[in-house]
Image 1 (cartoon, rainbow, N blue to C red):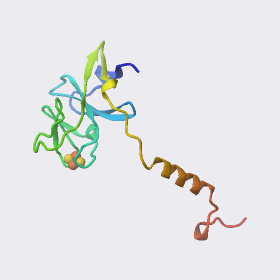
Image 2 (image 1 turned 45 degrees about the horizontal axis):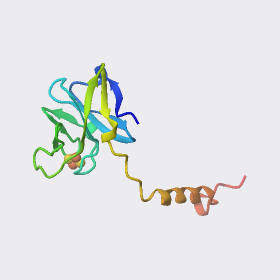
Image 3 (image 1 turned 135 degrees about the vertical axis):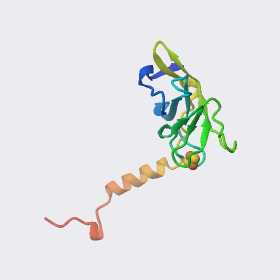
Image 4 (image 1 turned 90 degrees about the horizontal axis):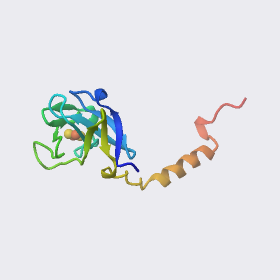
Length: 139
Ligand code: FES
C-alpha cells in the first residue's frame, strides 16, 4: 500500500467548508484551517452522536459537527468546548498540486460483528417463499 494517497487536486478542496473523502474504506473529513490554509484530515464520525463532520462547517481552526455543533480542533481533533471528545487526525499534505493523506495512519474499519448474521438473514429472505398477505396473486 502506498503511504501517501491522493484524494483530490488542491483546487478541488474548498477553502471554506469540509468535504468527505475515503481512505482504506474509512470516511475522512478533509478541511482547510483558516482561509485556504493547510489541509487537515480527521475521522468523519463525530464521537458525540455519529454526526458526519465532512458535512459540517469550519469556524477558524475548528471543524463543527452539523448535528449539535460541537467544534473539534483541526490540528489535534480535541473537542474545543468540553475537551471530553476527540476524533482521530491523520497526516495530510499538499504535494505537486495534489491533496494527499497518509494511508498507513488510517486504520481499516473494524469488522462488523453482525455481518455474518445479516448475510445469513439476506440469504434466508431471498430463498423463502412469500407468505400471508405479501404473497403475489396467482396468475
Ligand atoms: S453528533 Fe456531533 S455534536 Fe452531536
